[in-house]
Amino acid sequence: MAYAAAAGPLRTARTLASVLAAALAVPLALPPAAHAAAPLTGRRIHDVQGAAHVSPLNGAAVAGVPGVVTAVTGNGFWMQDPRPDRDPATSEGVFVFTRTRPSAVPGDAVRVNGRVREYRPGGGSAGLTRTEIDATATSVAAHGAALPAPVVIGPGGRRPPAAVISARRGDVEKGGALDPKHGGLDFYESLEGMRVRISDAVAVGPSSDGQVPVLPANGAGAGTRTKRGGILLRDGDANPERIVLDDALAPLPAMNVGDRLPGAHDGVLDYSYGDFTLLLTAAPRRADGGLPQEAASPQRSGELAVGTAGLADLGPDSPPQRFRDLAGDIVRGLDSPDLVAVSGLQDNSGPHDDGTVAADQTVAQLITAISEAGGPAYDWRSVNPRDRADGGEKGGNSRIGFLFRTDRGLAFVDRPAAADPLGDTPPAAQPDPSVTSARAVRRAGGTASLSLSPGRIAPRDTAWSGARKPLAGEVTWRGRRIIVVADDWYPRTGDDQPLFGRYQPPSSPTEWRRDAQARVVAGFVKSVRAAGRKADVIVTGGLNDRGTSLPVQALTKGAGLADLPAALPPGDRYTAVTGGNSEDLDHILLSPSLAKSRHRFDVVHRASEFAARAGDHDPTVVRIALPGK
Image 1 (cartoon, rainbow, N blue to C red):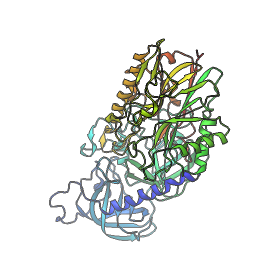
Image 2 (tube, rainbow, N blue to C red):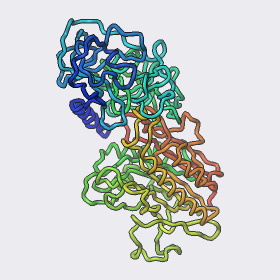
Image 3 (tube, one colour):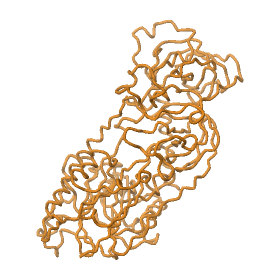
Image 4 (spheres, helix red, strand yellow):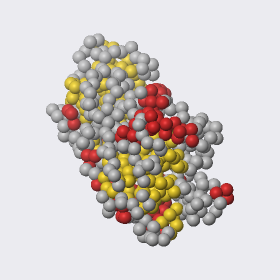
C-alpha cells in the first residue's frame, strides 16, 4: 500500500543520523591525560568491553587488539575474539569505527590500533552507549578465519532475565559491575557486538522503519502473550525477552504479528535509539502467520453503538487507498456505529502551512469513502481549531470530531440553535467556539445538557497548550439524552526515557501533560453529573495511557467512570503495539447510569499488528442496550 512507504525516508534519516553521529562521537569522562598516554598493548576485546556499561578503558589508546571480523558496514566493522574469557559479563565483540567503508571483510583475522570510545547512538543522554574502538590502523593477519560460534538466545542457550533491571536503580552507567543473570539491560550489554543466533522467531509487532520485534523459539518461555500472538506490556515488565531485528546489514521482510522466521538466523548485537537490536547478516525467509483483520459483531436492535477511530493525520492529499482502508475500518471493522469519535483528521490543505483550518473537504472525502464501502450516510460535527494551536503535524491542524448516522434513532443536538430553548444567544453573537468552553446545564428530570454542542472542554486551560482539545457533544438516542466526550491526549514522545535506556526505571516527562488533561476532563464529567444526577456520559478516544496509569484513574477513581478495556481478558486488552509491546492506549468509559445497562465492548484488532495499515491504533466499539424514552 502506498501510504506504508513513508517508513523509507524515516529509515534513511535514522541511518544517516547514526552515521553522522558516529563521526562526531565524543568520549565520555576521559581521564585528563588520556590523550597523552602511550597506547596500551596486550589488551583483548573483553578488556575493552569490561564488565560494565562503560568501558574501563574509555578514552585510552590501544594497540594490536585482536579479533575476527564478523560483519561490515559503511563506516566500520564488528570483530569478535575467538578466544573468550570465562566471565559471562564481558562481551567478546566490539564495533571498530573506521569512518569510511573498511577493506576488511568477514573472516579476516585483524589487529586494531585506536582509541576506546563510548558512542551514544541517537544523541541525547537517555540512551545507552555503544563501546567502540575509533581505529587509527587495522592490519589483516589472515583471511578465511572461522567466525566465532554465535551465542544462542532462547531455549538451549542463554535466556534473557524476566526483568529489565535487577536491584540497581538510577543511572546504570554508574551502577558498577553487570548482573546479566538478573537484569535484561546487563544481559544484552554482556553480548554487545557479539554474534548472536535466534531460531524460529515469531513477530510480536509489525515491521516499522526497518525494524521488527520478535521472540525466539516461537515465544517459548515469554511473558503474557496476546490472544493473537503479541506480548503484553505490563507494569514493571518491559519484556526483555523481546528482540528487535534491524535491517542495517540485510533486508528484512515486511511482517505482521504472528509471522515467523523459520530456522536459525545469525547477526551481531548492537544498540541504537533506546533498544538493543540484532543486525542479521543474511536476509531471513518469512512464513505467513495468517493473522486476519478482526470485525466486530453487528449491533442489535435497541443497541446504541459508539466507536473510536484514529485517522493518524488523514489529509486531502492522502492516497485514495488510505481513505478506503479507514472507511473499511468503520464499515466492516466496526459495523458502522451510530456515533464514531474521530481523531487525527487534518484541514483542507493537509500539512501545507497556509492558514487553512476548515476541514470540510477532508471530511467529504472520508464520508464518500464510507458510502462507497457500503456504509450509511454519515454526518459530521467538530470545532475548527485556531491555526497551529493544536499540535500535530505542522500546518495540518489535526482535530477531533464526531461522525454520526441518524437512521437508527440517534440525533445530534446542535447548540446554539434557534429552536433550542437553551440557545438564548443568537448564533451570530456567539463567541469563537475554538476558545469557548462547553458547560454543563441542568435540565428538568435529572439530566444535563451542554451550553455548546459540539463544544470544547476548557480550551484555554494550559493543559491543552499545543495539544488537541477534547470535544463534547450532546446526542439523543431514541429520546434519551447522552453527553459524549472525544479525546486525543498528549502522546508519549522522544522526551520520555526509553524502556531500555540509561536511567532506570525510566521517567516519563510527558505524563504530567496527561495528568493535567485528565484532571480537566474528570472535572468536566463531574460537573455534568452534578448538573444531572441521571446524566449519561461517555468518554472516548486516545488517552495515550494504559488503564493502570494515574491519568486514566483520574477518570475511573476520580470521576466514577467505568473503563471498558479493563473488563477484557488480558490477552485482548490492547489497542496499540509499541516496539513489540502491546498496550491499551485507547479507551471508552461509561458513567454509572450507562455502565449498569447491558453492554458489549470490543477492541477490533485490524491496525496495530499489521505492517501495511491505514492507522496505527485499533478502533474500538461499545454497544449499549438502551430502551430510549
